[in-house]
Image (cartoon, rainbow, N blue to C red; front, side):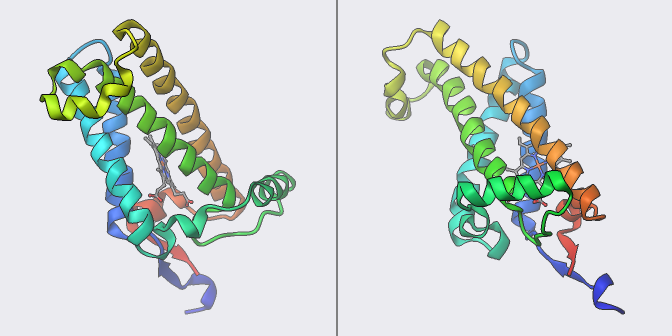
Length: 188
Ligand code: HEM
């Protein structure tokens, strides 16, 4: 087999399960907004758990899952985007610099979405857990609802950008990045 066709493991099982479960939870949460509150909340708590585990995995996980593997300088991201526009972007086995930046943005915006949602529900939580959300005490549920909806919509915008980025990168490098997120493998 030529080197060109040889495959290597890039995404470990945790990253793949995290990714597709997060996608499913996001779809459930987004489509049950204002309706089916129990399901909406369960999807939100699941996302919070997934995001917390991803933060830990970003420090102790496998090579391409680590933040140090894909967080780069803003100048590197800009240079990558310029190259991508010109169709000359370098291929990366892990996340490319722009993809890495998008992942950090997604993690932050999704966390803000979930946390503002839990902020609204904090009255239903056990007192010791509710106290973790005391930073919201000065805000009415009406304003928290606005923040929550704003971050949820912002997440949707970034997710669309993420998917478009994945498709463009797949096309430029003639590889199926979606399949790689399913079976974990990429061409060497
Ligand atoms: C149909 C929809 C989606 C597709 C096809 C897709 C595809 C992908 C692919 C191919 C990667 C790896 C990118 C690379 O090779 O560098 C990735 C990473 C990622 N995606 Fe998606 N994605 C989708 C939806 C979402 C959604 C809805 C979210 C968030 C709720 C999300 C969050 C992430 C995150 C956080 C990563 C980084 C994975 C990690 O390192 O743990 N994606 N996605």
